[in-house]
Length: 199
Ligand code: GRF
Image (tube, rainbow, N blue to C red; front, side, top):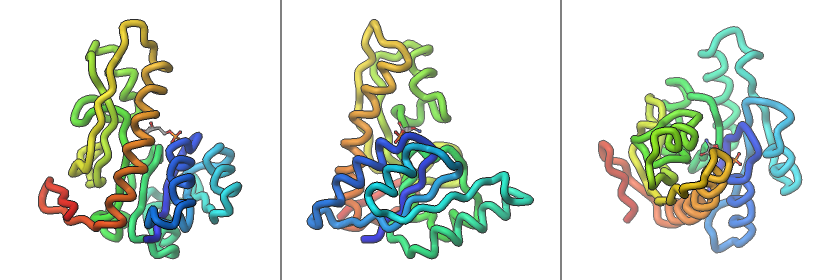
């Protein structure tokens, strides 16, 4: 299966996928990595793995709709079976969702629906929850609201700060992402309302 990965940062989730795809039995190939900004470590990781990259910045387009169309075209050019947002910090628009809405996965670093948005671990810590985790879901038009594929629980420790909690979540998150992307590409999936079925 052909997979396009979208990133905005360090790309440690991307790296876990790149490592997994080295084994042909995994069933997925990362055919391109896209970003909404330059100069991020994730783009270097892709280049080091010999994967083509592209950067599509909102600021380079007159409107967000133009960016949405451009991003859609960039991704479509690689004919992906699955698109994975791995720390891609932008909400895509209707054009992108029209093209990839049934095959656009995102990983979030809390147990949704609790603590959506870009400060999940910080918000979870501030709230005082004792368990949080990571959620893999298919993106819909909302922010972190789409149908859930899988979740993994991670304990919050008494002496955690945002950094230690974020790191503990990311370890579990990477394992879940690799496991579930492999499962999806090998076995396929259907989305019925909020229910994701993997045969
Ligand atoms: C992940 O924890 C994701 O949930 C969050 O940002 C992190 C991305 O990290 N939105 P990386 O770029 O894969 O290292």
